[in-house]
Length: 406
Image (cartoon, rainbow, N blue to C red; front, side):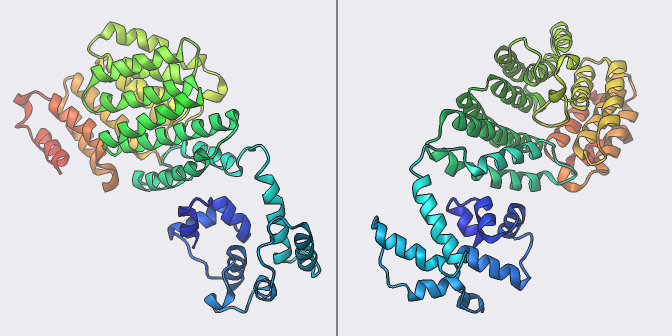
């Protein structure tokens, strides 16, 4: 019932309020990840959703008696009939039927007033912030399922006319959630779907009026061609993001500069200039947390690691890899693996092909199967393809080839 109600546009928060449950639990029940076993909870849900007791093996609910004995037709706008109905319902106190009648009266008037901030909006904004903290050890596919499920709850709110400030907040949250969905799809290697979600995020960001969000979306989108073999396309997107973000020290501007530096590896001087612009020290404290939506020190060193690796500046790359690993949580499985592959690529730049292969194989074999796809696989494949053909007969290189192929 929760899933059906949600499918027709009733939010988990509204269901939770009606049934005296937490919204998170309603969401879990709707998705089948938890079950209702307590009889008292079943009774609360029956009352909240107006499910007749007989359908659940329960006694008739108090509101059913009112419904059975009421011979009143639709009361329309007849004040006397409404008054009599309310008096009858309230005679027994603030029972469920009485509260339902009061709610109906309030709702009838409330809906004619100027639209206010939807109750669900603050919850959705909080959800977007929560998703921004990344995978937290969960498989990307699980995070993707949760993200998209919550994303769909935005549609009913977007289809209702809202005051301009509320509409802007809705579009901002839509852009953030669509952008983070695109990030997960990018990590899973689904480039076409990722670009489509980034396009949706960009439209939402543009409608929200938030230039920094728009620049953030473009900078994150630039990482799709960057990580999948099209650095020039990545550089073009990153430069668009830098123009939109302007020169103010913001998350979007710093991220765009860092991505540009990674994409411009074929133009080392421009890449180093972009790195000089990616100064995390200029960011406000609130923009330096470690989330997808901000630009923290850990993320900064992850970008520097790859930028310096592609520039073959192995000393500075190793320094950033060490800093990033120290700042990465043990549950940051994908990030730590990518840093280890960067370190392996540095070994190759320094002339130790065997060490590069062994480090990459160790990083891949330590991963759960769910993570050995997409971006991680691509980064390992890039390393293998960069090894000169005369080394392909060596045992360590053959082992890397087999692990990547598997």
